[in-house]
Image (cartoon, rainbow, N blue to C red; front, side, top):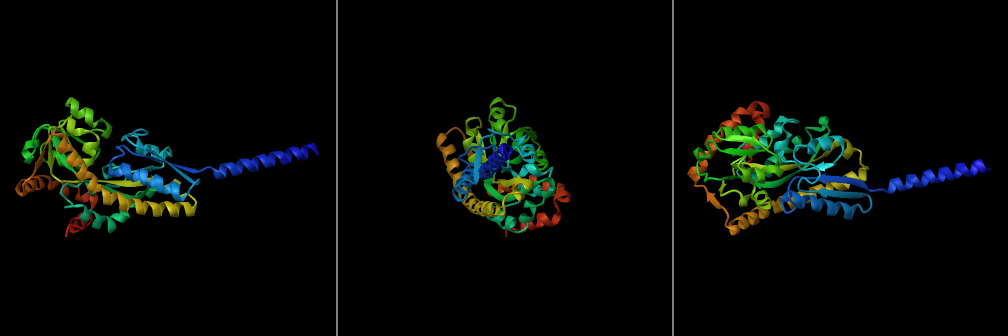
Length: 327
């Protein structure tokens, strides 16, 4: 009888432990490298808010901004190891996983974000699922905005950039973009940019207004050129095994939330950039140079050969489709 009681007690204990374990929320660690007052930062917080509201007690989202959990160099490895469940890396980070995503780094490819939207709604959808064999699943594209140039000297024509050292993300296309104007690209993580500019390790960089302002780059750069020469977008990604292993109803709800958050992020991105630009103007630390149509055309012509250089890797048809989205 004593043995039976003990057996029943053990079974009850195991059952209770099982219930407690089942009741534990699914923890989603969402890490990123930028500040919270940026399109990506706001998007991550909105995803957390909606996920925890609609799946109370079932899902907990932990957001880690400003490289506080993993920096540029380690975040992809962390995702693949399961140490983090969601990231939103810049599209420049994916070339080692799929060469086609390099299309988003081609200079002067998209005239505006409306053209980007048209392309991503069509051909861009296939790129989201193109890395599943490497355990990376794309959930959405989030806009940051069009890139501007910064430097410690005025950049009005491509010749003004000759010999300068520009920080770039780890992207072959972006390296070639600066080589095309006879500048020197230097790969550097986002968290190191301010110090790199401050110490002269690099002389300039490229980014959006919101990233410039949130990282106080205007404190260490005298000039910004409103070039709109390229795109900074993010692909929200997850560990494919983790996502596909979620309870179906949880996954469906999170997919729906991601659609809603993406609409809001992309709607707010341009407003955030314009607000950040105005803050830089108000700080009076830097001069913003607006290019004439003729000057902009010089930059376009100088960088256009980069398209041909990567046509074989990206695909001529994909580039043609992206270019056609400007119409």
